[in-house]
Length: 75
Image (cartoon, rainbow, N blue to C red; front, side, top):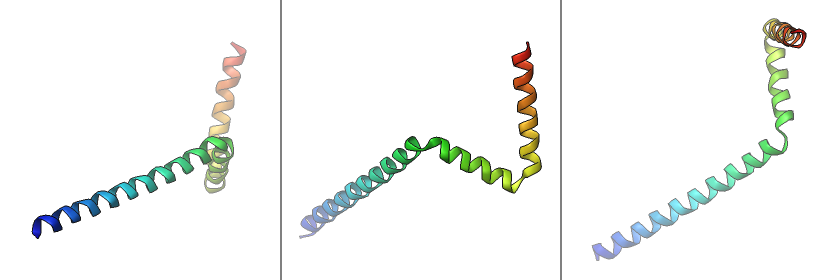
């Protein structure tokens, strides 16, 4: 009897792992589709949030990037 109960427990464990893997794959696919569909909106949202939290640092980054791009365009 213990052999049958061990086999039954192994089948249930395998089924649970299979279901968990399927659910995880579905969630990852949904997340991937979201970030592929709207990456610019997500990136702009993150940048806006950072600029709201640290406006002085964001302003310095903009200034530095502007200098770098201007210097590269000039030369």
